[in-house]
Length: 99
Image 1: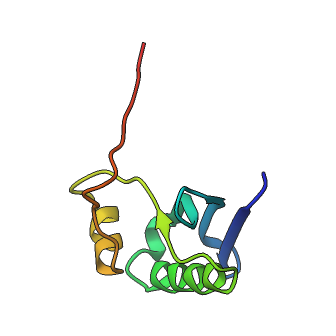
Image 2: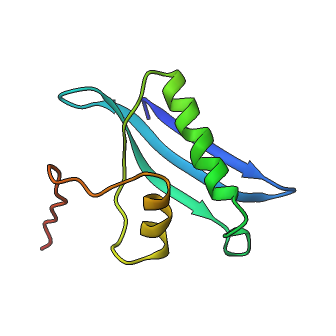
Image 3: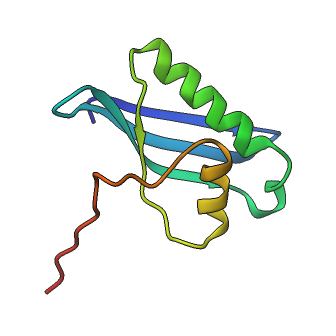
């Protein structure tokens, strides 16, 4: 996929990874973070914090300064992202169509 970015954190095996893609929107180049996973036994060890910092550094070097993601309210993932400066925007909404 054009614009794909994937990072992996290793400690003799994969302990965390992040994947997504870069794409321009109507105002700038953004990164859509699709998957961010940390093995349960590695959570709370700062591996996720280091991985998200490396992701931001990598994207910044490519001219990207905005990351979009979707997560569920009230989950540990929401708390993790908020701790790292992510916020819920007033301008964007998630829409779904089921049939």
